[in-house]
Image (cartoon, rainbow, N blue to C red; front, side, top):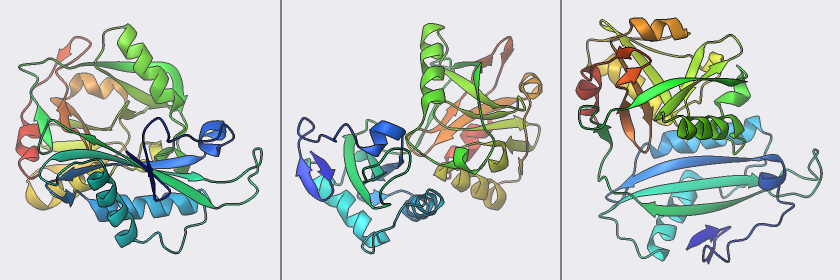
Length: 278
């Protein structure tokens, strides 16, 4: 069952009009959220990112779109799908501009829908590269613009889609996206962290990476709970060859270590030390 503007319908019945702006123009935002044993992980960060993104896109935020209202909507959707709170779940909350019009909308009112899917893992995890190698490459067919709009979780993810197709066709597990300055900004499905010695580096938001919720959590954890130095600065592809470790993060998978980039192989040491904090 899908929660479509507080009405519960089956997947087949949850239809959007072909003129819906999410379909016609990618005029929508989404949050992918993990729920574990009845707790929405990092819920305040997800909520405030969504509110900030709606303001940036000049969407009208309904008066009832409070933290408590959307939390209740999520748990009501979980219950409507017959899922208990003792399982791990992936929740996708999508907000779209609900208006007619061409490029210029007639209004900035919004609609929303919530989807729920059960996950196998009961907690944020670290994927072992000793058991299952994870190989990455650069995606150079298209570049992401550095700027505020690239930080948003909008439904306009065509570069990520093309990168995913390229990875599948060429037997890579993931690709790193670049901006127009040829700086690494993120992976297809998450933020990137590069380790060299005692320093952990991740691209700054100004380079065009997604303002990841788990990225924020991990940066704060590194600063407060470890002896590592964390830096938000631009990363060139050349630096990958000199690094000790690379990992990719998002709020659903946790941490995905990289085992190989071209001829360079990597260890899985820092990632193991970090995941225990979650």
